[in-house]
Length: 303
Image (cartoon, rainbow, N blue to C red):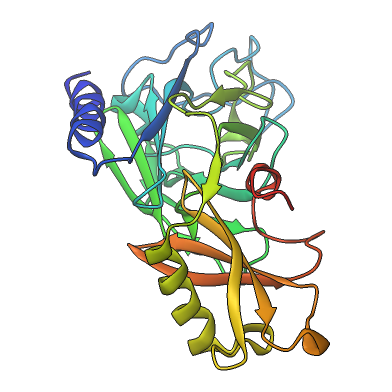
């Protein structure tokens, strides 16, 4: 319990020391204990119909370690997501925890960020339960190739998974939903009810209303230089200027390339995103049906 309390205190500390405008969005869910709990050091007996022979009575012990509480924290400036899972019986199961899927987005049905995490696996022999492997996890982001692995650790009752990438910053992530859990290798030896977190959602708080305003002269100058450096959709500061610039309060901006010669005027816009303190081009065009820009941001920018 001390470790988990320290983790929560650390999250509060991060909120207090975050840069101006930064917010760590947190949520938490707590779960009831399993109906039956193991004794430390107990070896699970074979169940009826499983193994060498029938058992005098059915096994009613948990198949695997189950969560006592899950705390989620999203830092929208650092671009990091932390999932901390406090478990019921760390003395028995160690870091073993079944693979669990999750999805994160602007709503509880959103899946902009998808991933999974797991603790070490379990080997069962005649003498003991042996945890093997290390906690791990990975995530993928809609509209991007590749994946990001977790910095994972186990300390006392808490498994902690942290994913961080500049592409995760300034996202409208307000809710996480947990999916199916994998079957632990111990399952053939025991049966019974476990805490089921499939379908569990956790809302992340601390979100201000998303707004957009006209870009300042300094911002227009900065975005013009960024677009010119990348020649985005043919942008050239010698032949064009960046007009109709709008910027949101969560690190997104849009500008329209306006040709000095009206005969060469197009109908596209350039969308920029602030990441690691620097503006960069995120995407460009005239329509964004499969864009990785959050729908709420497109709406705020009038797209």
